[in-house]
Image 1 (cartoon, rainbow, N blue to C red):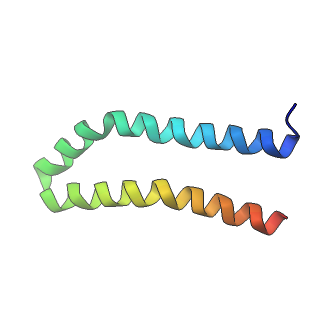
Image 2 (cartoon, one colour):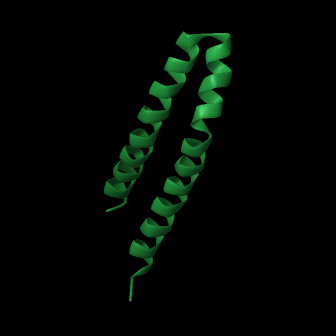
Image 3 (cartoon, rainbow, N blue to C red):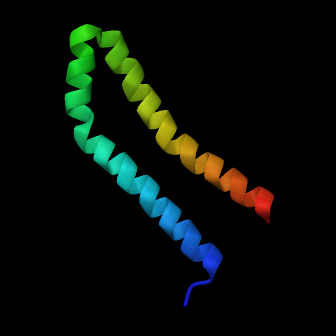
Amino acid sequence: MQDPKTRSTVIAALAILLGFGILWILMPRIMLALGAESPALAGVFAVVFVLAFFGIFWLRARQQRRKD
């Protein structure tokens, strides 16, 4: 069986991936809506989305290192 720490990590990763997965599915609609206002705004949103995906895992790993 898994210990509570491993289980917590798996649940957090699953929640993050599901959240970003749903946003990823909606991404074309969001990009089209933002692109109608400003193509630059759509580009900024795409960059922020990708950085947030990696940034949230980086922050979680950093938090886990501080706990240990």
